[in-house]
Length: 301
Image (cartoon, rainbow, N blue to C red; front, top):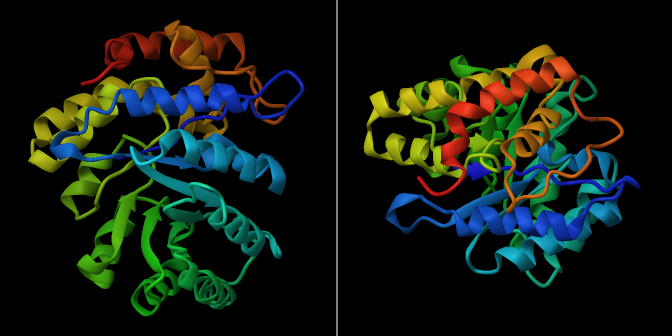
């Protein structure tokens, strides 16, 4: 399970680094994964890295790495715009505690899959020798062929996060084999179905609200206890459906609202972001109701 915490923002629009480190600390201190698995923390789309400039993004990643240390695994999300990917990867690999992997998150509708394939190969060839390892985020099914080829031909690309739909999991698993990770990338919902089709783990934007539930779900998957896994999916369904409605309109802000509604004193929600403000009152009421079934899972499973 990969936890993707929201990054809290201050009233001046800057990332609250101290608050973010506190959120990462919560995830590390409440690691309920069985088998001695380390916590995987990704700073990515739900963290709003796409709204940060290069300097702020690298500051956030550096702080995350220092907080994690050897206690977990750090994944840094990168939006490949112009030369930004090269610069961010180079800078972050030189930090005191560099990322263990980078999640490449292309913007939709603005690139050709073949050009993307070539650009990613060059990125891997440039930074792979310096321990750069990459995971691709698939948000468009048309990219499946290019991603398969990338995973099969570049040793620096180690996996794909499926963000399209359940139908794309099994074909990707069969195509790339056990040498590459195929990760379910649309939260807890349908993560059990994806696991049955061969996905290895899932990403969770709600772990910052209920780490115990996300971990219990991952544990159930790895035990093959799919009845329990589906029960846990049902508990978080309300919050997940709010996050993903209307083109993921409340992906970030519903999590912030859930942190506030939970009244937790060990996480920092921040005040929202200019492009992702607090949810309307009616949605806040929905969020409060959705938090009730998962509130008890804020601690370890």
